[in-house]
Amino acid sequence: MYHSAVYNEPLLKELVGIKKESISPINSIPKNLQKTKIDDIPNLDETQVIRHFHHLSQMNYGVDSGIYPLGSCTMKYNPRLCEQIASWDKFSNTHPFQDYSTAQGNLQIMFELERMLCEITGMDFFCLQPAAGAHGEFLGLLLTRAYHDYNKDYERNEVILPDTSHGTNPASVSMAGYKTIEIPSTNEGTVDLDVLEKTLSNKTACFMLTNPNTLGIFESEILKISKLVHKAGSLLYYDGANMNAIMGKVRPGDMGFDIVHLNLHKTFSTPHGGGGPGSGPVGVNIKLEKFLPIPRIAKTKDCTFVLDYDAPDSIGKIKGFYGNFSVLLKAYVYILMMGYDGLREVSETAVLNSNYMKKKILDKKRYEMPYANLRKHEFVLSCEKLKQIKDVRAMDVAKRLLDYGFHPPTVYFPLIVKEALMIEPTESESKDDLNRYINALIKIADENPETLKNAPNNCPVMRVDDVGATKNPILTWNMV
Ligand SMILES: *Cc1c(COP(=O)(O)O)cnc(C)c1O
Picture 1: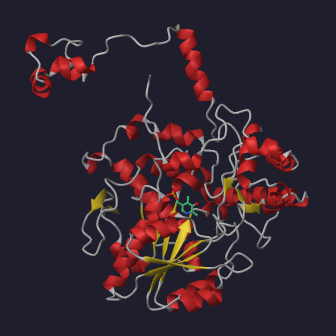
Picture 2: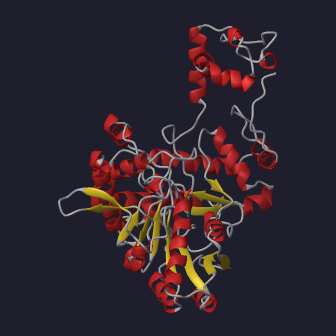
């Protein structure tokens, strides 16, 4: 507004109808918006200001502060090299509108990243456009619809999900105009083949599955599941949020999945949790290729990279431009750094860390772990016994962990575990850090219930009214 006042007098005149001669920075502010008295603005020197903002920055907690075992979110270390390269001028100054002949390097990186993701997942083609996992799910379901429509199979309007599925799955199903059919898991926490078989029909468009599932259990009957799903004429969708558990070990493409999304910001190391930017590329097998969004990145015979819009059966565009390039670039650097064997080691270490914690915690018998014992990169504890004995809930334990200086796990998910604490330590944590977290969890279980119910006690913000904040959001700050 200040600049428009100084440099664009005619516009200002038109906007607020004030006389030209009265235009000066202060007079250009309409009378009714001018302050008549100065509020109580603190009078601070530079040192005090620096300390204030430094203190604020220290109040945040991130993966660089300590263990952050937020189950399903894969909060792992993000190598600084990836950040450095993503901030290079040559990358950060490219513009999506510039001619592609001047952005050949960027296109080559995206082209090669697509091939790498195909290799890691066992899929045939990838689209890098979706901005998050949920966006990838939505794309996957649009591809599902395009596929069935192409085959004149118009009756299929149902998508089946297990009761362990992530909340974004049914949300994406609705957004894509399908109906969600939820099926219960077995006592082992896995897909019930009998129930699945009975639920599949000529109305089923797709079965969406996370493997390992959100309990951290690998669906070992996946080949049978794939057979059943395909026999019914349905497609099989892989929610790849848990890819950190199986890289270099098994591939969704080899398990029979037709569509896969990856969460690059989770598995392939981009800082996340603050709302983006993220990236949820979608891989498909050959029968779905022609429906993929445009433009596709192609390589011509003379090794030029181009954006190819020539795809008559494509569902169209799913995002402005070509995806979140900086996240793609970080994933590319990360994969090159790690190599295929390195990625396998990541998964093996993530699974080892999770099982180490699980065993140590269960041995102390303060928390239970319903369903099968064998877990991959995460496990879900239940505080049900604590609730019954001491009226202490999962949320109380989570809040008390803040007092110990730790980030809590995911709580109350998946829904089939009562009073759930979903712990995913990732490969980044040392044994010492795992032990400290284990000890805190055990100690908390033995504490006085009142201490837990009032927690956190040592944090800048005490127990917040999260339901109130959701139902009555106040999104502005009023200076009095
Ligand atoms: C995180 C997650 C998603 C959604 O991914 P976003 O990138 O957050 O949109 C979907 N499914 C599972 C199992 C997840 O953990």
